[in-house]
Length: 348
Ligand SMILES: [Zn+2]
Image 1: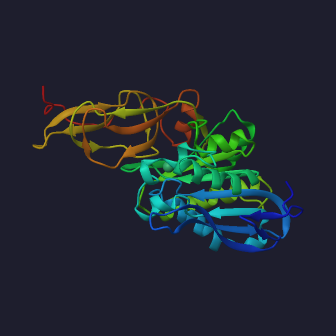
Image 2: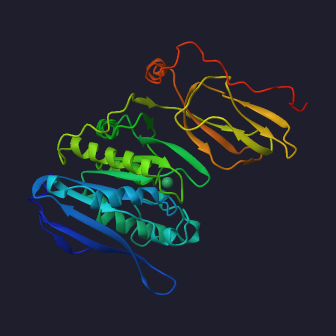
């Protein structure tokens, strides 16, 4: 799409080529009768190019993306931009205000796209965003963090069988691309289904800003823009390796207790490796946790307390691409020595 030739408007507000506008998009109303409005910055380059959205905090407590969007608005030279950037630092305003993932009535906004004009509160919210913004775009990037109590390796999710989604995902420059279409009602799936290929960036944790995560995200977004012809050549985001993973597993606690975890996001682990222990209040080991599969750690719990079923480590399975990752991480091809942990104090 050639944005210089189109009349671009949001909520009836027209934005000309070369213009930047801050708009409040009304999506709902509060219990105090006030408008719930999503802040939207529209930056139109002087030169023609695609229209892309970059948005954050669809889950109201996943705020690191807001810092990525802020940098995109204030830290880059928009004279270099071709086309139109629609930047939304916080989508889920009600959740953001109370530091929650959810909309009122505990609804997850990212399960209700494309929404309904006369539906429930989440469907109406989703409908406004989808019809006023998403449908007008050529592609999109949805910024998330791990859910509460978890920390994620920076990685990209999307439907890798979709060539345009795969192209965006590769361009972002993350090491791990998780091949997941997304659940029904998720923004990335529904947007892609109407011809707006959309990827999701996952990094960091809720309620936290991380400068490192923000810079990885900003570089990734600009790298995607470069791929889309919206930004000059950009090499910052070349990763040391890049793998598409189709399957991932949560390692779950089998016992209640206090977790001593020895792996972190980005670690390569081999089936059978000791990755942590669960201790009782006296400090004795209740059970040792072994990696059930070989792969790269893409998420961990940040909470030290477990009961049977608690998700501890999220592992992306590596098979054909294992040697590539091993070479890149300068690991020996042979199975590495498992981490040592005395076994004498295991309770029987
Ligand atoms: Zn999320």
